[in-house]
Image (cartoon, rainbow, N blue to C red; front, side):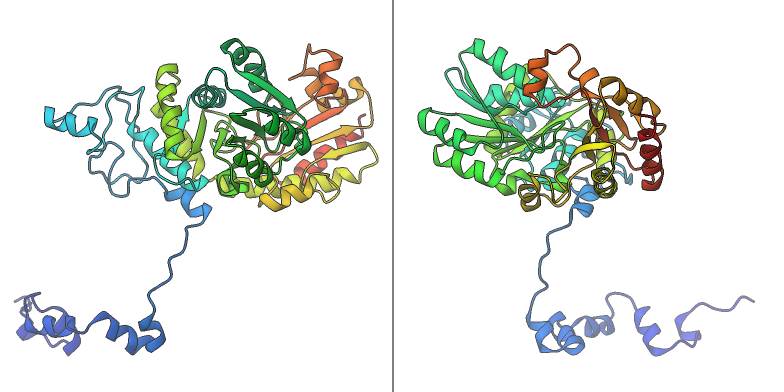
Length: 454
């Protein structure tokens, strides 16, 4: 016969028998009767029992993985055991009743109505970016179909006809053209100043009713850095908003909102997505400002697809690790190039010799993966260097796993006048190198052998 499994016929230690008692057993009640504070005192003494555990802000590494995710529930609100956030591809969402619909319209129930306005998968992405940017609330980020769409929606929403924008000559070229050409036709004034000319900024603020100051930091391709704290202080005294394009930094290296900026925009195509396979933008700030931008975005129709949102969510989970690799490789390469006899000048804020180093050091935790440098050669000699490289691809964009290289004079500034190129610091021998996550030694050897081909 099989041995009996009755508790009365099995010899078990007393502690194990007590654990196997029914939950209603008096023995369990006696065990659970000890207050947690008493147990803490017995284990750790009076000091530990008296003090509650200190709360600790989650790190960027942890936020990039977990922030915004629906733990134990799918993005559509349905119970799921999927670790990955589901892709909710439906374009419209239904309500259980008219009362349910009215509760949604009155803001008493969080839900979704139509894909152009919101989507559950996109919402997860927005909440994750809000956490990384240290925005004030979960409704403080808007994700758009491209970085340029985020810029356009922001400027249209926050600068009314008759308003005045101040921007730097070093800002993103398409944003500069939109501000100078398109917004001027809407009755919006614009003033362009040098990024490091704070006296000019102060003068413009004193003499005009400025609505918003817009700047990139770091800039592309010369990696200049604006003192965000100083700009925010000067602007806020005069009631002007501050918008920072922080694409080349990423939320890992720089958090403009914590430095005093009102709005931060990114091309999420770059470091956030990180794999050269999705185009998107995002803008973060206070809930009040983002609600204004979101209203304009609904009219512009630049909604991101749920599939693209999912790909960025996936990319963000490794962003901290990738950016750490970008930072290290770029800094090592910048130091190497600075000492190379065939290099005239290196533009990288991580170098102590760089004029922007102190500003960057005060507001950044890393300096990014882009290094620009001037080769000791002419246009054709620089082209020979670029063509001799074996690892990087000749391409625009940045922030992905693969290294990319370009010669701005024959790519992003092709067809521009000599005057415009000079105004933007673009020389024929300038190279912009976006370092990926390949092994440093491989990239180093490739760059050194290509320099020998000049």
